[in-house]
Structures are given as C-alpha cells and as structure tokens.
Length: 178
Image (cartoon, rainbow, N blue to C red; front, side, top):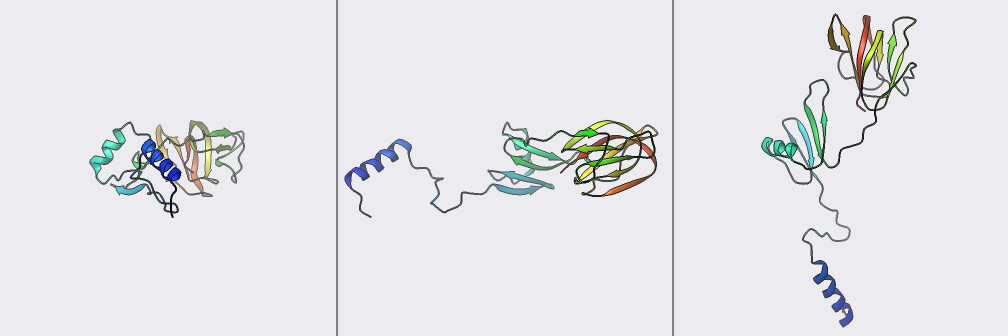
C-alpha cells in the first residue's frame, strides 16, 4: 500500500502524540488472558502471575482491589480474584417457604412458622422448633444451637437437598452460597 504525503504526515503525528504501545495487539488477536494459578488449594485469578505463597500473601495485603471467597465451614480462603469486589445480595427472611425460590427451615409443630431465606449471603437470628432444612435452589448451610453449643446442620449441601433432624432444634444462622 502506498501512502500519500498527507496520510504519512498524519500517521507520524499520531505516533508522535500517542506513542506506540508494546501491549498493542493486532486486529483479531485476543488480548492476554488473566493468569490463573492454584497456591495451597487457593485458586488465584490475577493479571500478573502469582506463583508462590509469599507472592499471594503480598497480594492479599496489597491495596490492589480484589474479591476473596472464604469457605464458611472452615474459615479458609478458597479463591482470590483481582478486581473490584462483587456485589452480593443480602438474605431476606419470610414466615413462609417456597423451596423452588428459597432455602427453608421447617417447623416441627404449630404455632411455629416455616422460614424461607432468599438471596446470597448469611442471615443470623433465632428460629426455634425446626425439624427439617431444605436448601431450595441454593448451595447452602444452616447452623443451630443445642444444649448451648452452635452446630453446623450437616455440611454445606447442594441445591434441592432436604435434611431431617431427629429432634427439634433452634436454628441460628443460614448461609446461601449460590
């Protein structure tokens, strides 16, 4: 292709004004993908590669915006993603339950209500006389108290799982993970 003097002059002016970036990619060439690694069981998604525990610790302490996922059962970090924090919806509670839309705690007897939990996150409270738990559309976990101790209602279960207790308990926390 032959460039005229005015086109060549315009090209020189653009390069002089904006420079040439070494990270520029050709049309149709995908830009570099973020780095994904696993360090001590933690999945790490960052722009720059993190390969060691020391580098991960430094990243976690840095001011770089990041989103960290923690396993509620263990308190351990499971993943780190570079970027602004994800918005999470708070959990709302109702005195009715629809297992197609909510995780649910079921009462053992009247006059106690069934309780439905909608949204992603954790809700704490006191819901007495519960005998059964259903995760509904969520991966979820519930906790209860018995004889003064707080106990996980089994493990974190996948969607549409129902768990029955052998006696009524007071539920104190519900977490809907996804």
